Length: 344
Image (cartoon, rainbow, N blue to C red; front, side, top):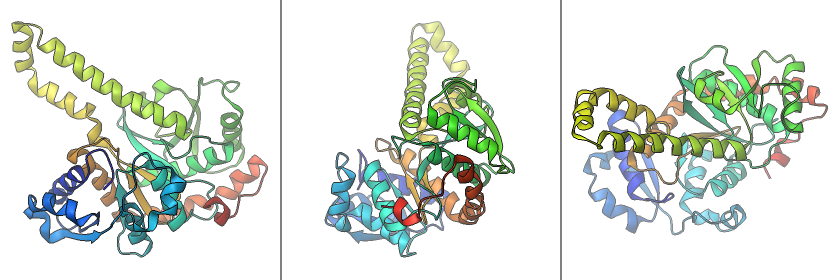
């Protein structure tokens, strides 16, 4: 029931995903009266759908604390609860990000030793793809959390990008060691001093993301979310410019016809829907966040990511990665907080 175009976009997404993943089954948590008319137009997915009625939903402008207080009867709570109960392997939502994070932390708890979860997104680059985190879960981020994100991001890149030794960089306003705020500089020093077996590149700048300078870019949720949405807006702007240029004259239209195949490839690469979906890393369960404004094709991409996570050995990778946390925490000069405190 979450997102700007629910439930139509979500059910359309399930329809697209079913074609690519015919063996996957879906539990739809939501208002049966609103879901049923949309489902009637999708007979092909009837056999793989189970509808669980919920009376309430989380609004896009609800505060996380409000959502938690009345959350147990909402579709968002129930979807995460199905992961906690092992009824589902992954929860996917296009709803309120803050509420989704709060409910996921409350129900699934953080992995022992991790201070805060982060949302990781896969970003298209000149070299291929790069993992960027955090892209919206944590507005304020300290050095300890940035170190956690580096460890989680590297493990995620190993699974999703299939890399043996991903390179990791911290997003900064410059590559020089003297630049940046205290949190970024302290995190970089800790990653260097900890002895963790990680290919730590050092600082990277904003244009390094699209260059693919490193395989994992670590930053705060505030900066990461702005960077993500700026990149998506830039892609749409370039697409607008190209369409306007191609419609300017008869000759430009003719040129477009000859180059339509190349423009089709460009359009596919620039389409934000193709890389929609971010994973909450650091939880005892998998939750995928879709953009709230996406359509069915975009939501299907989030489902694709969910299927990849369900079929991966990511939980085992996280256990291996977190084993290195004490070294990093020692380098920062403090003990890790208890997992119970971090989840509250």
